[in-house]
Image 1: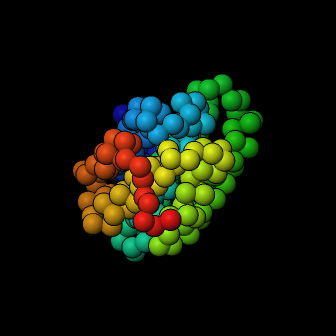
Image 2: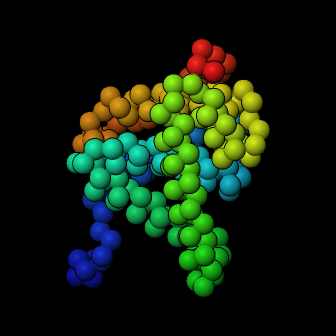
Image 3: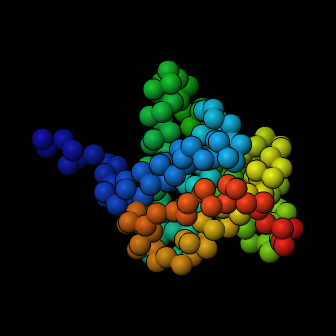
Length: 186
């Protein structure tokens, strides 16, 4: 068919593969079972948002990754739009909800970026407790922060091209699920 050639939002398969990897990681049962993240629409959204923010942030740090970072963000927004519609949100309400999704993304991106820049985990734990656990979290939040630090270390070791290709996987969250989390950086 000729119509797909005229779509405005054609994405390379690599960005779709990268986003698919992020979604699969965020849906991993270990987060809901061992990290005590609520297995709800909001809990799943928070984990998807967390993973997407981290990968987009890493891509956007380098000039050659900006296009891939933007494409990944666009695919995330398109997926959220589709999910809202599947959940029965009416066409007139979708833009209002998408505005909230955008605000959540940018707010968390800013909070996580600032917290990750600090040597201490205190700000990152606070941000995770507020955004993922609704103000609580305790040891589970500390373990999630250890996992986030491992994600960032892994992403920093990879080239932008490798990340954008979606050919690598993110660290196994089960490793940090049973640990006591960071204790030396508090």
